[in-house]
Image 1: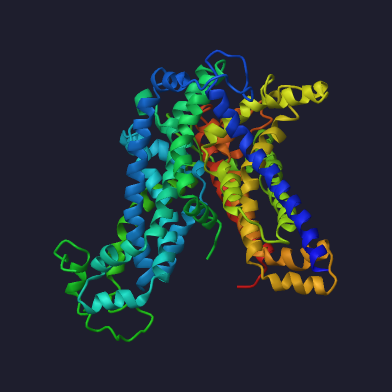
Image 2: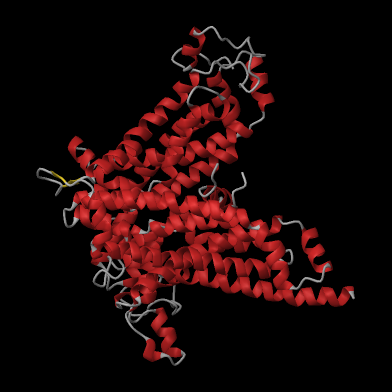
Length: 279
Length: 319
């Protein structure tokens, strides 16, 4: 009986893997299509899924140079690194206070910060544009860095508060006995041992900021300040006929996040699924 | 531990009488010996930035929505007319209706598919899940701009979809999918399904692995078939995951500006226009800033209500 049960479950296992494989293929088709097209020589009429005869890196070079993607990458790096660092520092401090201290109004203030997880950017972008235009900072990196830092603080604070709440009290207590201040406890004790939590916060903010499209679309008019997603959208407008060039540009846009994701997929998944968790 | 010098937030704390020596303080909930007020200094920088660039714009949007304004000249008081127009003006009602249609593709379909798959897959332990999880979740991390480029090419007149249809003898069905008045909206929606189904599947499979095996064994002992097992064990076991999945996918479905802007631009006509697209279109193309702000606020309210209702309905009144 056991053998027949095992055999039954084996065929079932095979079916399970077949089902998973189908969905894996579905998930991969558009992505593989982009990659295959990107390696197809420029001007070719093939629309993906014809295996290119040889790996042709030409499209990437062309996209990088003629498509200004070198410039766009620089803009994206400046903005993304600024947002990731600034929001990480601010969120860590705020999460530390919300997670380990108890002060009047802390609960209400925390919920106020959580509000930002739900507010869609579409509602903010209209007043942001007119306010920042009044201050003369549209079409600068500031117009991208400041709002995105603010929007990242909601998740960062929520995430870091959860970490600090779960951090072992005995460690902080021991440090306090040694006369350490809260500032020292935070940066010298809790932050170093909280690397997994902090990594998750960093990669999520990195991904959100790198992929952001609406804000640069509204704020940026100079070609030299465009971020890569915005650059790709303009590129799409100019090179609709040349799919292989467009695909190469698209691959360049996705690469910095995808590589990070493949290295740190657990952090990514944990962080992104946390967005739907409510208190 | 000797790095505590001036200019640190604790300087303020040192001035107060509650020094670390009073560790065994009055309230045990407190962190060891920390004067509470220093907490304000820790949250102040984050709150200032958040207040200036999230809360203030939100309030300002609500204010702008009460005016008729072209973005340049003087504005005139509109009262709530920008909001009543959301119901009475069909060019504004349309985008909200489209948005609800898209929710079927963004939320209902992925959750249903993932549930079915989880039901099949969760009856036995699976190996190699790391690989599957990595690939299934991949669409979530790719920029929407890139997703749009990929799918525009698939849907294009000489793209992959029409190519496949030709090859299997359904050439009569081929068309420019994103240019078709009736099919552009479902076509955009299916891109959403593609993006979200992996997220739901990853969530449910992880949740299903956490359901104790004994529950399945007990159900089998009682003679439960696959369907009953799913209804009695899997489905209740995945309530929390279902709530998270629905919340994430609904919010994604309501905030899909990128995809619509980059695939169809709301067209053909306004067959695929959605509120998030309409906000941009009105504020920056047709200079109806007050109306744009009202749509943004309505969208925010819609997201709040829907996520609240979902979490209540799915997770139940417990906790």
